[in-house]
Length: 76
Length: 212
Image 1 (cartoon, rainbow over the protein chains, first blue to last red):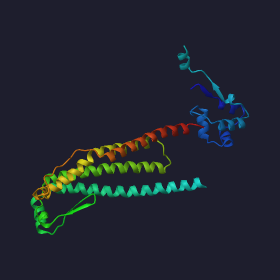
Image 2 (image 1 turned 90 degrees about the vertical axis):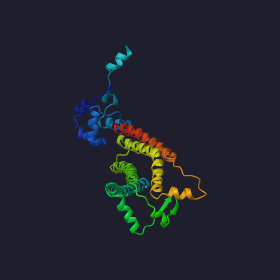
Image 3 (image 1 turned 120 degrees about the vertical axis):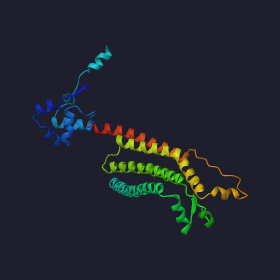
């Protein structure tokens, strides 16, 4: 997938544990872990809003777009 | 508040249906065992044993076809002709019919159990519904044959054809073994459509579950 989740980087910068973030955002640790490892297919704006609020960051700090190799081949 | 009540009512309904289908399952299991034992018994006993039983005892017989009941007089009952082949085949056909119904009940029960566990729109549920649909479609092709053979077998055993043909107002008797029960076929199609809807629902459920 082309969207990379940089949640672990933000958590390290804010010196916050995943469990603390999960409690503050009112999500389960399992779900946040799935987000961190890129296993989720979609994120609601409300969830992204809550995470950014707690981590005091922008959505771009958590989400990063990287071009897929497959997409590169299609363009060529 | 209304949502909570609706949820409670739904749970009660599912529990009630589950109990009904469990009871049906038990009854059908007993019927299957009974007919299985009856087939074995019918294939082992001699024709003379049955004829002696009928001659010695006092029996009454009646046929009920969709609300129309025909009571046989004693001379007709005494003319009972025991044909082992017809009886065993008849019991075997009834056993197959009950087995198909039993399979449908098992599928519905598994579906209800899955709903009680909170898993409604899953691929396995949609497959169960589709299997029920296939059973209905299959039954629509064979049920006419089963019913006609039942009437044929009983008329052969009680030699009813001779009685009927001896009446001046009956010209002849014929049996139509092959035909489609269109109501059952249509039910099968509708249930299959519902199964495909559940399949799409399982896809949407997966998308929802994978959304944070």
